[in-house]
Length: 178
Image (cartoon, rainbow, N blue to C red):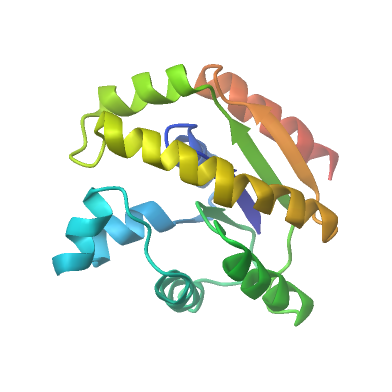
């Protein structure tokens, strides 16, 4: 399992697609799952930039993991984002259900993130929602990167302000060393 972390707009989905296409890996994007499967009031809240609860996210990820061959390499894009989610994931690794290959934290500046997200034109990509996502990333998710490293996960920081192919090539350098 390769984990792609970073603020919205850092390029996690772009890298997930590149990996999936180039290597045939399963790519699990929690953002894509949420946009497809979450409806009603929860969807409206999500469009405002509000995160789903840990229980909702873990349940969805767990159900999705049951659909793929966990003995094959796969990508997790946008999960975990909280300590509760990380604890669940690391328990799955400790129990032998999952094998953690690497964690890639895609770092990107506020200006680049804002430009990318506004350009893609999704309904939930408003300036207010983008700022909220960046704040949530800094306060909730970024500490998870350190937590994973402290737990023994191989964590690599990648400058995602660069073009997608350069970012992908840098990630591949780490993967090829494994």
